[in-house]
Length: 364
Image 1: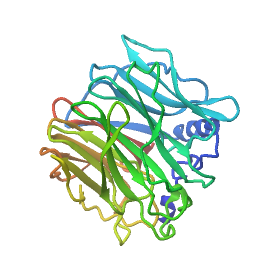
Image 2: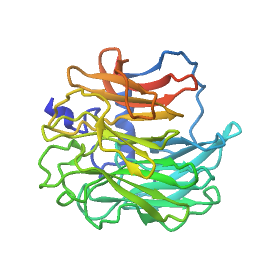
Image 3: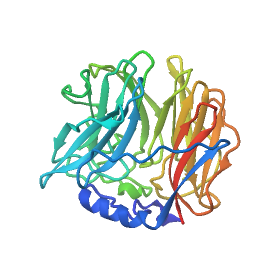
Image 4: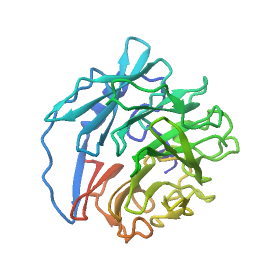
């Protein structure tokens, strides 16, 4: 199972040096061989009809979010000329997409299939965007840049760094959620303790020069002021996506943990009041793997109900879902929902009746 740690697990590019166009072609080829399975745990729901995307040719790395008033935000990366890549977004409202707007366009964006930008709106309607930007010539040396807009995306503030350590290392896999009183909370993987920007890549093999990847969190207000920065876990899997959601109690975050014995099960932390809890496991799968599988968990919440979905290959490849009724303090026994040959790449949405809609990729 060591090779499962490669970012080429699904046949997609592992390097930012590969073109967006190349990414699209590889994904189109791969997706012709797989089926996307959608399961509603405990309750069936009909899906919406297809809506054409406003993105241009060779666009990639899409990200969807919703605003407090029900509009949908779509962000993506799109080539501009021969060298630059633009972060763009559009809003779906009243049955149609707005004209795309550009947030940033640069030649030094870090473009990677697994680690991508996002745009979200806070409770007051302020938009927040993040992207990844190279900090040196090292392949995996990049920072998280953030910006905000108070006029619906017509103009954006001068961007700033979310990570302020000044180290030329990996900083990414960001999750951003709106805070109840405005502003957002940001969660990210932070490689400041790792030596240089070459940690073995997004195949993530052990032995990265002595340091560890950590999990960090900070608050951002509309003016991009940072507060409440916290170190949540000192040793986590190097390149699995993180996920965070807001419960009635406060934010809850999940990620792939990494023990000294190379057990990479799903970790969970949550904030109650002003403090974050110590890391715990959603479930003790016991997946021992010497490389990062580039296959992170996802979670969602309604009130104090939380659902988390994840991929594991501890005994055999499978997609699990577990529920919490106490805002992530405890989780029930996982439910396996795949059909026997999943590749993972999960997402999850809590429904109004307390069940969950889950998606993943599985060989057909």
